[in-house]
Every structure is written in C-alpha cells, then in structure tokens.
Image 1 (cartoon, one colour):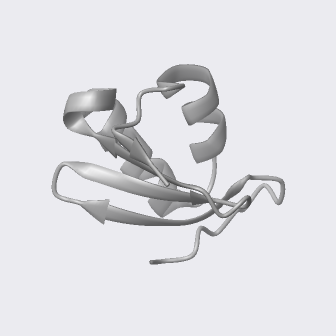
Image 2 (cartoon, one colour):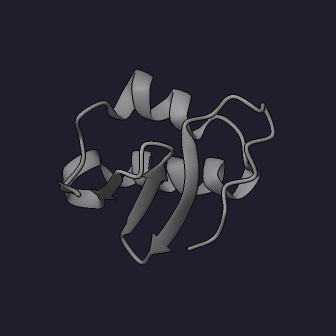
Length: 74
C-alpha cells in the first residue's frame, strides 16, 4: 500500500490503495476503509484518488463530503 505523502503534516491518512472502481484508505488508528463507486459515488472516488496522489486534502474531503460512504471497514 503506498504511503500517503501528508503534505499538510496533520492528516489522519497513512496509506492508500487505488482499485479500478475503489480506494482503500488506512488511517493512523490502523483502521482501513474501502470506498467504492457504489458506496461513495464515482465522482467522489475519482476525486479521492486525485487527492491521494497529490498527498493533500484526502482526510478533509472524506470528513466533509464522503463521511460514512464506505463499503467496508476493518
């Protein structure tokens, strides 16, 4: 799983994995969340992928927009 760059220095996101129609996000509390096109919306998942690659804004976007739109968590 690629490490999240965390350019702001205060993100709760540690790592992420991009799938064809999903993104899995690992948070600092060692929790993993799977967001899919179906659970969070294709536009939101695409935006999350861009933010993950940029290394900034992913946690804030999840908190503000996606919220509980995950398919699974573990």
